[in-house]
Length: 134
Image: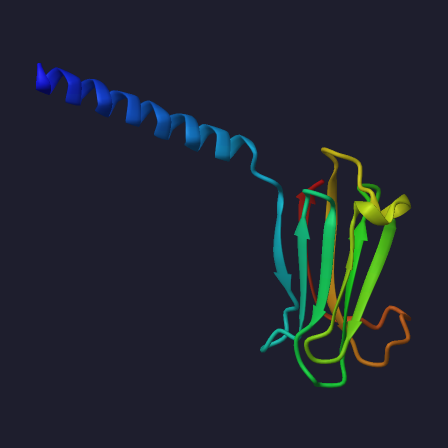
């Protein structure tokens, strides 16, 4: 009788583990981190689809600023975020409304670059990109 009870308890525990794994996997938000392509990455972009949180950080005190872009599926720039100065970050999210509130289920291109003169004239360097679903 004891063995039967232990087997039953083990079966209940195994079922609970399966439910927890399936639930955690189904609730997974899209996003991650992206770094500039220079030898010692000076810029970082982080995205979390839960709240459409996009964060850009300048990782080094080197005179370059980090600039992140969120690009619509049609290739147009939706918005950009700039961070300048070692350790400084700027963030946008759906809470900011308007263009920062991304359409759920849509795949956007996220791009992180370094800009030396801060002119925003398209002279970005060391860029990397990735697509994530909002």
